[in-house]
Amino acid sequence: MKLLDRYILKQFLGAFIFTVLIICSVILVIDITEKTEKFVKAELSTGQIVGYYMDFIPWIANFITPLTVFIATVFITSKLAGRTEIVAILSSGVSFRRMLVPYLIGSTIIALVSFVLTGWIIPDSNKTKREFEIQYLKSRYYFDKTNIHMQVAKGKYLYIRSYNNQADVGYNFTLELMDSTKLLEKLSSSRISWNQEKEKWTLTNWSRHIFNGSEEEIEKGTTMDTTLAIHPSEFENLEKNYEAMTIPELNDEIDKLTLRGAGNVEFYQVEKYTRFTSPFAVLILTFMGVIVSARKSRGGTGFQIALGFLLSFLYILFFIMSKSIAEAGGMHPAISVWIPNIVFGGISLLMYKYVPR
Image (cartoon, rainbow, N blue to C red):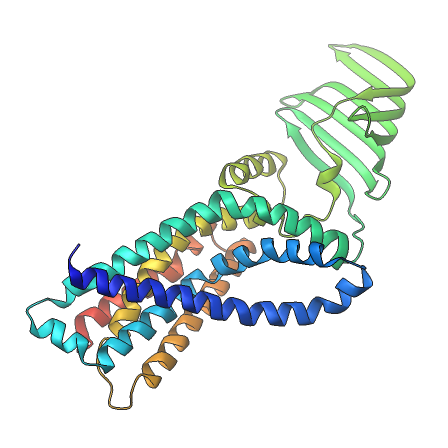
């Protein structure tokens, strides 16, 4: 690595870390201000609050990475341009394409670290963050869905008329075993309840019908403990629980929800594909940031920094719109989450070709 590469890379990474710290500090102050009343009401200790923010800060820092890397790129490049250092670099025979190399090295490092954090490390810390928020910051959740149908395995269909997630009790339970369109077995119960000690479901007033051709065998009983392919946690508050899943866990959850025919599988698919597109967003926004700010402006760096903020927020707006369309089922998530990168990547290439430097 040449001296020029080390110089720009050091400036770039330093600006990125500085930007992350500044924005995270602002967000942290706002968040603490908003939640102070809830902290006091829940009578939380300082240690509990600090522990919560130890999980919150890495999540928010990684979440704003595409934005902060773009702002850092514009900030440091406009400073170099303002001091005519870029003019000196290009005048020495270094091409603009070659000057991009340290930026791309830095953004690749950031993208890879962000991908590992998002895919495996931050989801684990999000588990404790989410548990804290559900226990202390959010209102008590009541599962209010009725007539719940789901396929829990191949040929196995489960039905529960209603479920009380506070008592872990379900009513009018049915489990059917099918072979194509033929009913082989039907297990029914007026009430099912979760036995925490045994980690099994207790069926009350149950009956089992076994069909063998024209013959029918019937079994009945008062109570029976059994295992089912569902868990009480599936009836808890699942809002944004995909944020607390690693990529392998997301894959398993998507397969399970697809098998059950769940209507919210798109949210998990969007989360999965977003984790793969975010690293490329870092590279694209770095590339665009250099092009936007490499030219020296007579008015100083203020205009370029303002333009950088505008473009970064346009990207975020575009991303939110594409994500919402995918979550609503209007477009396949794999396509939708890539649209912002494709559009802004195309804009970057056009700017690289036509914008004077």
